Image 1 (cartoon, one colour):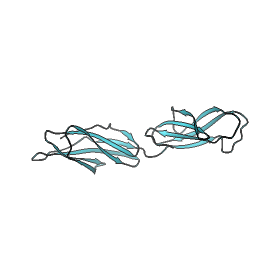
Image 2 (tube, helix red, strand yellow; image 1 turned 45 degrees about the vertical axis):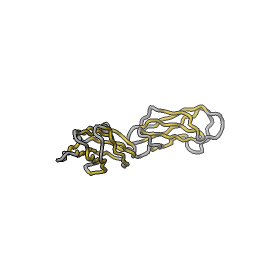
Image 3 (cartoon, helix red, strand yellow; image 1 turned 90 degrees about the horizontal axis):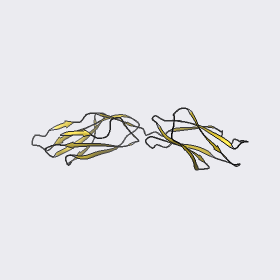
Amino acid sequence: PNIILLTANNSVFNQNVQLLYNASDDHNLYNCTLFVNDVANQTNISLPSNTVQNFSLTLGSGNYTWKVQCYDNSTFPNVNTSLVNTIRVDADAPVVKLESPANNSVLNYTLVTFNYNVTDAYNILNCTLFLNSTANETNSTMLTGVTQNFTVNLSNGNYNWSVKCYDNVSNLG
């Protein structure tokens, strides 16, 4: 059998992983088995030849190797194994730290700068400032591990503020 891994090498996923491949053979395919870190994980049986197939699985954060091994239905079954690819799983939410203004602050001005810091194992997609549980402003040019801010002109009153950030695989922190 000929096997092509269709999921790009070094792809990053959240914990829900879908690995795509295509297997073809002059004889019908008997089965194809997914190996993760060289351990058989699951098997697809009675597959149509030359059709996109997939394996769906849930993994914890980390780097994983994967390959597919297929057998055909010939009289003397042939076996072939794909190349080995790597995937990365980021199942961890970004960590957001609100820096200032401090909780229960009394401010004597209306132009307020909200400072925060966000960290993540991979990249941050965006962060949104919430004032009284309502989205106010979103920043999509993020750096991790450094102080960033939103500056907002507020009218007099009491405000609760928070910042929520998504990483590149949609984990919310």
